[in-house]
Image (cartoon, rainbow, N blue to C red; front, side, top):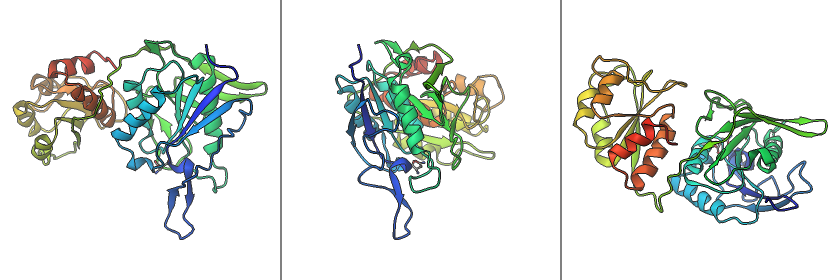
Length: 330
Ligand SMILES: NC(=O)C[C@H](N)C(=O)O
């Protein structure tokens, strides 16, 4: 049972939601003390415990920071829900990393802002209130082994960590992703109105004690002849390629993928849809799969990278890695 009164863990990690313009004109940077204090607007009856494991612009966040967050949240006791404030640039990667590594009995919700607090109509306080209400709502609660996993709340939309992605560099409605939100929170006359459009699903966890694998991402383009492939393959334990359409590549990539013994995961640079091994021309998805490449399903390249990083850090064989991606066990 959740504690009464409700106890919210509020974990600040930096990003625009914690930033102010530098008085010297050098640009926005996260502040040492987050602007958003423990007094979450609209949640005066909630006991809030704040944490600040790091205070970074999210382009500086690494998988090691994500692991630190997973450990922090995994160690929380007697908590009704957790909210993580995070920069928006890599927020979806932290959300997906936690989705893959963290099983806890309370909801975990990530949010951020596109405007800093000194701007007219900053979006931070509203997003934080929405995220806290989602985290404390009974419909968000997980049971062990199943559950919604970490959620992303932005502009009132509630997203699944697997599918959410940043879709705009500057607009306040910066998050989307196919097939869209799994829920919505609005502020009704009598309090928050929250609705989910789908039930929780079975979760699959991949939580290595340390992140020892190296995985690199390559981005395909018209006329790519494989530049950078050999160097990346030599450095890394596995590769992800943001390929074309349903997962196709120029013909020159086919022999490179045939020759490597390292896992090569094929994602797409297209913004929605799965990888399908349909095309049989040299470099077409069907030929890449026959050459040993692993289709990333509907994961974007940077999320496929995190999954591959975790699976290789756990020491999984290539056949097991293939099964996780192909059977959608994430
Ligand atoms: N809106 C933001 O938070 C963007 C910022 N560059 C960050 O990700 O830290």
